[in-house]
Image (cartoon, rainbow, N blue to C red):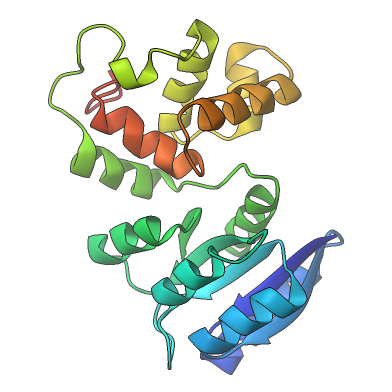
Length: 218
């Protein structure tokens, strides 16, 4: 079972998320929090695997709460949900350490997919968010050759990294490369370990920052 904590200051929103998630046989909502401080305490007490975190929360906003939760021992994965589709929130959420970012009006299937992806470390990066990362970090032209920061990656790992920047899941990368999904998971884990990165979002940002990929994915 995937253990989920829902943190949102609106009871109707929390109830809606709970109903959606608990219709799935592999997801259990272990708690709810209506303030950022409650979310931090509940995350430590209930040890969820995934926290759904609203940005605008009383007492402590969701981004500050995310930072505190991720400093806990064996922290959960945090997926930020908000009604605000602005770059400011996207960047603040990613800098705070969120592994995913979804709008509250996303289809219920997308919410469920985000929870499952976060629980397995295969964090969901919405195509619209990837586009913003490109616009924010990409160089106009890619750096010739392999950037020094990425030199320790093998050729196959570089291929996987390039596919990650396109927002592909492990399953989609496996299909693209015609390999087993477990092989992709191993490659992703090695990429993150070698580059000392927390998650796939950081890997995407690094790929653009170093000029490994540029606008248009070249």
